[in-house]
Image 1 (tube, rainbow, N blue to C red):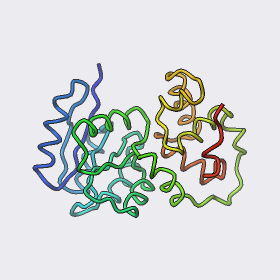
Image 2 (spheres, rainbow, N blue to C red):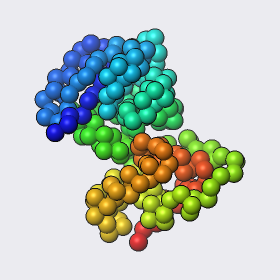
Image 3 (cartoon, rainbow, N blue to C red):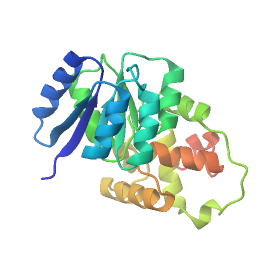
Image 4 (cartoon, rainbow, N blue to C red):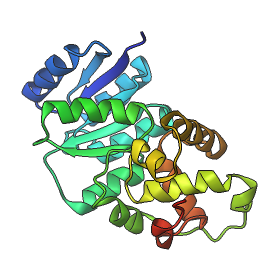
Length: 224
C-alpha cells in the first residue's frame, strides 16, 4: 500500500517532533521532511513532492500563507493542511484563498489531525460546517469575464454535489442526502476536479463561485 507522504512545517522543533511521532505510528503515512520556516517548506516540497503538508502560519523567512501559495504553484497536487494556534477569521480566509485544503487549531486532538490528513488526501476539505459558508462568502468575488456556461462543463448532479459541499457536508453526508453510494460521490468529485483543473473540493467550490456558476443562495438547494 502506498503511504501518504507528509511534510511538517513548523518553527517549533517540539511540535515537529510530536507530530512526527504521531504520524510515524500510522501504517498508511510517512514523514518525508521537516521545515522550520516557510522558505524551507517550499524548497522541500519541490524536492520531496509530499501528498500533504502540515503548515503553521506564523513562521520566519516566509509565513504559512505565502508558503501555501508558492507550494500550490509549484506542486498543485500537494494538499496543504494548516495547523496553527491562530483562529483569526482573516487568517482562515487568506490561507484558504492561497490554496489550503483545510484549517485546524493546535488544540485539536491527535486523532483529529490524523483524520484530517486522510481527509484532505482524499480530496475533501477540513472546514467546520459552521464556518464553511462564511469562508466562501468572504472569498468570492464573481468574475466578469465571459466564458463557457456551467452546463457545458459540469452535469447537474455534479452541481448538486457542489451545493451540498458548500454547506460543509462530508462525502458520506452528501451520499446520504442524494441517495447515492459513497464511491459514486467520490467518482463525481474526481470528474469535477478533472473538468475544472483543480485538486480539492475547496478549490472546486471557489472556482464555481467566482465563475458565478454557484451562489451561496444555492446552499439549501440541490437535495433530491
